[in-house]
Image 1 (spheres, rainbow, N blue to C red):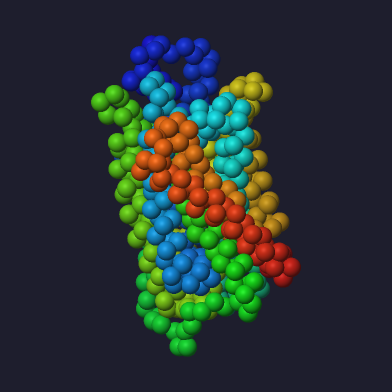
Image 2 (cartoon, rainbow, N blue to C red; image 1 turned 30 degrees about the horizontal axis):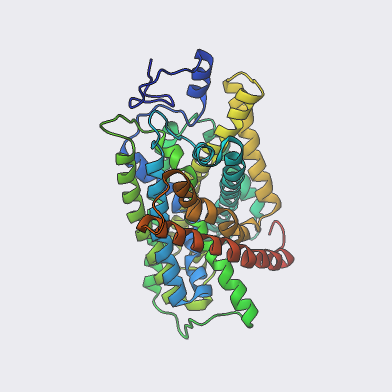
Length: 448
């Protein structure tokens, strides 16, 4: 019997050889959710995954990069990551009778069962767990900013750790939603919120106009400082393109037949998502930097002061978006944890197992966020160390390994250009990011 909702779909002519127990486990795991999603699911899931709160740091990154390098990096990153995302969409079901529902499954096919796991899983976990911790901090900071703007007469300052706990409390509930299909409403709301606060960010900046004595030169006092700041800013840009880490998991929710494979609607959704990404990223980066120059703050919403009601609303939009984005990145982690517990350690699939496992994970990310509230300074470091490989060039390496394009062909050249630029980004971004972490860690007061 061939089942359309399992790892074998309609274009397979082979019998499903899994046992009844294996099928039950696969159906219970989060990623093997019912394959009923439409193309617009791909669109808003990818928008939620990519248009994170890191877009609000784009003007600050531009101040470190400068006009020429900054615009070039933004445009090239948009093009390269769109191309590598297309590759992953194509490779999802490029083997007849098999769908690669998880990033590591594709890596295992390309590099072997053991090497593929060691190459993909550590990087994917760094991205997903790192994003969840950063989003815990950013969610707490946005709640704190909202409280400050709305109740500015409050004399006693509430610690950031309390706002992080408030933000985390939502996830103790939402994390019990079983799979991608069940969080579609949350993800859709998050995608709308990301477009809203991005529009507010560049719209309010444009309303303020170019500030007096604005300067666009590098702010660092030394050549070394300028270079390291430049390196760190490249990581900030790379951090913004993390959707590749969950794209196969998103595509796994779509039906597929020989006549209508899932790559068709998935790609339509990706194109729609990337148009929205461009509408969010480029105006915020260019208008924000144009208005404030190198004096812009790390979070442009925190830099903006008036009108208060609009800034308060924008920060609440950020909170609502981060709630959905946290769940999008947490779902593959839940899948890995539950797969190990059930398949390797032989735990019985149950609601109790899911309850304890997921709540422990949420508590872990909350604890790290509260203990290291300067963790968001790792944007530059993680952006190069893990995001660049999984987003910029690992799909190209897998493509070359599986598809084997003719040497010196257009595909061969394109992939090697992406690999070269991605490796360069992976090298320089962590160098600058590590320096920023050291500087911030020395001066940062915990729980401020």
